[in-house]
Length: 352
Image 1: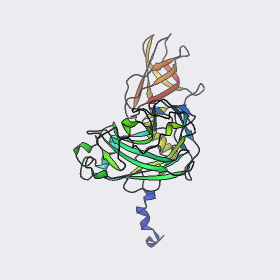
Image 2: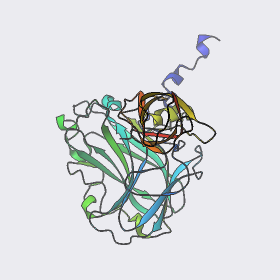
Image 3: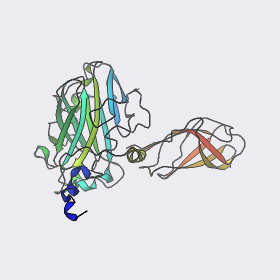
Image 4: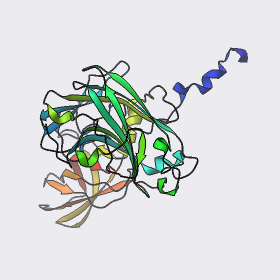
């Protein structure tokens, strides 16, 4: 092919950019913990990397749904099951993803070169009205950015785009030293999708950064918890530098590997064991090493169901290993000797 036939402008085509999305699993495809509806508490995970939270007198569930806009196949669905028509000051319901700080260094927060980012997403709800999304930056000095958006038509997928400049609202919080994000494996920014907040949390001004970190929402926002008819669907979540571009679709394996840095489910069953060697210290204390599929963010926590030589079973705690190899403490009703173990359940959690 002659060089003149190559469309050089395609090199700069934003559709071809990779790793632009700071959100993991924004298309809501990976759900290692399961897809069916579960009741929401404080920090409930169903779809990977999205924490769903509730602190009020009502109740709601979260699940993976196949209801999605064109170009997507799955979404996060929240459904009110017990209404709370009057929120007290400290009550809330919201969804968020915490982004690892060392993945945000190129935003240059804390300097005069801090960059503008854009949050885009698809949303649908049976309850119309004003909602809010917010960004919380916890490192150094905590700051909160809040933005209103409107769901205009009930039960209709709508795309929303929110631009967050470093000086939004005429502030200089992000461009000075207090705006810096530490270069570590802690939380750098939380991206929040707000469903219901009492007066403690609705003092924000739309389109502005605030030094009051409780300013998640505004007084204009709806109370989504006020009826068991209310649902909320979310997908296509993207946070990127500069203006909004088309959603970056990844192959499933790439997204799964990113999710496994924070949570790993080995998806074992009674007929599909994980085998590993065991160091036998005494007849009542054994230790097994499990190699992780990816390097996790930090030492994992969780429990296993384990068996050795068919002689014992039960739920056992994970030892404090590292983020590459997880040490498992097999103790309790151990009898006999053995140099191997197999696990029928193994879930490892290193969420932010």
